[in-house]
Amino acid sequence: QVQLVESGGGLVQAGGSLRLSCAASGRTVSRYYMGWFRQAPGKEREFVARLTWSFGSSYYADSVKGRFTVSRDTAKNTVYLQMNSLKPEDTAVYYCAAGGPTSFDYWGQGTQVTVSS
Image (cartoon, rainbow, N blue to C red; front, side):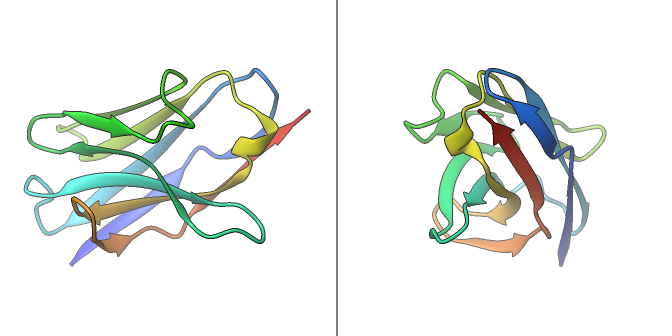
């Protein structure tokens, strides 16, 4: 089992920045992909970004490319999502996940991000 706990969400004005954190514990996560997803009210959950824990290589959805950066701190077993130039359409509950590359088995509880216009 892998436990994931997100933090760092909040309310920010359009154009602002937030950094989300995802602390992982339990089974070793070094063999997993770590992903970030989001779900806006009334919409399906969508992929945001992912990276390989071992090599740190990353991949992004087109909607966030150039604005969001995913990274990890292997010593802290923590994955980050740095979100810059935030837009109102980025408002959603953001989830961290482990597994992949396309199917993720472990999920965090989510953290709310609200971007005001």
